[in-house]
Image (cartoon, rainbow, N blue to C red; front, side, top):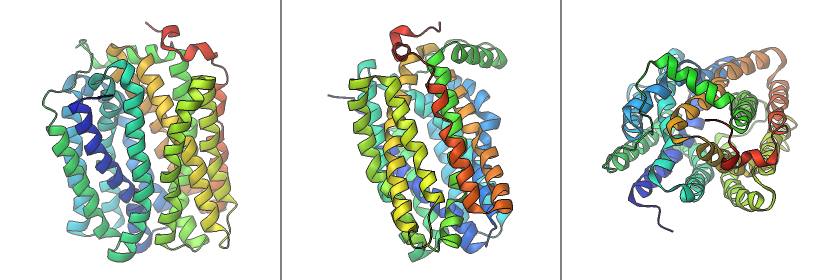
Length: 402
């Protein structure tokens, strides 16, 4: 099965970039904790600052990406993100507002990048090869999840959290090179050059008129809200309450990298045997289970429970990532694919910043453990929107949107 040169370049560059993303996901909060001695609320605030742009710019970004082009959007975003991350080791982590600014800039560039990235595969490969292409990208994500957290923890212990960010900035440069080698820009499918407001409204109507797309959007929003609160507090909970070292924390989180390929393989088998709807329910349930385990951890059981939680959630995450993304791509009309992605990112990722801020406030009031338990329960609500969609509706031939 040949997916073509353009997809091969995309896959190579993003495999490296995904590994770099894992470094920063752990390294940047550890800069706040270990270098700036941040409070739980400040660490959660750092996570929220990076996610806030999804709430602010995702809707207009969908229109911009459709007009600017998928490849050009990803190129520009990677250049901006590289410069922002590189500024921390070059100029030093002087204060907390500086880290907030870096997180915001990276977040602003990430919004159009992800909209383009999640829309580009159907523009590079035939429709029948979209699931296979998405599985390859998911396998790269699993490799990054396996190696990234462990490498980040070890690198932070060896050279410090600040210097670790050099590697992530280099990964963006590699992504820029591979994207530049894709000679023709990927089409968006959009020929409409009408006003931005009209295009955004049309996107909302399209998503809300298609029950599976609507259910995926709300399920993702609920899970992401819960997981954002959990993830915002994980580093400080693991280090200060459970007394784990950065290296051990990174190793426990790398269990997700082992599990994600299993989730990808499970998605193929489960979808063939039960259909997309039940597969999505299974994936959502497994993904939501992990944070509950972490909330019960003690210093004596922390390493094992965090590894188990990462493994279980990793299986669900791998299964969900492939099935949900492929479903959304195939159910969306080509002319609406970018706007559909933008609407989904606005809702499902727009909740991350408020959830992270709320997690910080909850932790400051009730403690990190109770905050993690609260947000684990919120994430488990993701099952509800999926329960009301008939099984046949997940097939592209039964899409009701026009």
